[in-house]
Amino acid sequence: METIGRERLARLLGAKESGCGVERTLRVLDGKWATLVVRELLSGPKRFGELRAALGMPSAKTLTDRLRMLEHQGILTRTIHAEVPPRVVYALTEQGYSLSDILYAMLVWGEANPEPDTPSA
Image 1 (cartoon, rainbow, N blue to C red):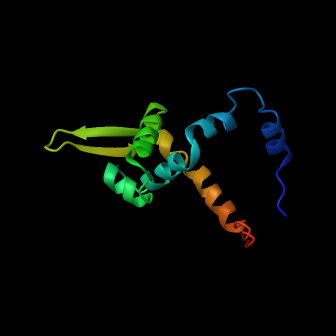
Image 2 (spheres, helix red, strand yellow):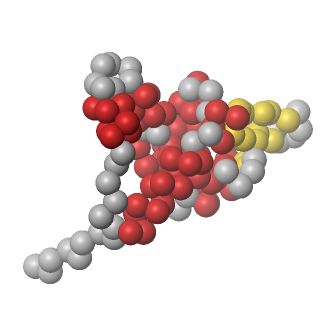
């Protein structure tokens, strides 16, 4: 079993004040949809319909709420192109792309630790 280094452990344990880095990250990656939106946009800009289809069709309201929240957090940009009908494109900012290492760590952990089988009733 891999252990965490002393310096890393000390830094994690010392980060208990309100607004620490862990808390900030959890506010940005608030739930499944926000995290998956970031994952999808790592491959490049996408329109609303493309994102929704790639995510398994969350409700339009849920996706809109998450996109607005991520835009407010500075994680993505929303560009409206003056066309009829208007074309809206979402893209990660530099700050959004900086989340890729966190998402990769989540992928590696999830693959190494699959969910336990659900006992049958």
